[in-house]
Length: 181
Image 1 (cartoon, rainbow, N blue to C red):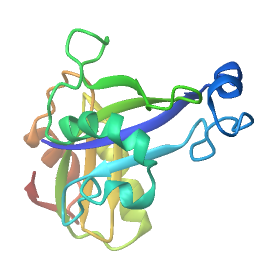
Image 2: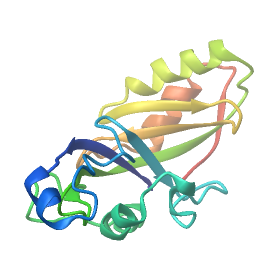
Image 3: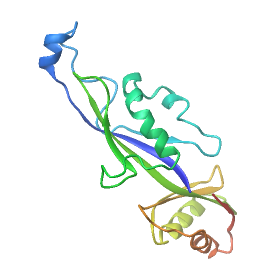
């Protein structure tokens, strides 16, 4: 199993009374860095390592200080917040700015990489997506034609066997599975 981490901005607050009382600029306003709905995906597979690049400039330093430990835990396949949230693969956290906090939803995304030989174009991508989505427990599929693999995201506590994924792909004579990570 491999792991990615999705960070979504779910809310922003602005406490103008605190800004007026404590800040040098009393009209600082809400955080200008993030917008509600912003999503960021962190990964560490196939030569990618966006965590160590601190989001490659996509994250505010104050926010990164608060959320990076949860992202790191997710990328290692750990429980982000066991016993606190209804899904231990998820955490709600906010940045350190007390006058304009940003609230984040941090989710571990569990997936398998199915390495496929025989893909040639967009028709192959759509055919393989449809086939892999039929496997019980699969939530989402991204087929990476540029990498010759499919990323198969699985649901919480889902038991998706490598053999079921292999059968879904190899039902078409054109494709063969050369590995599953």
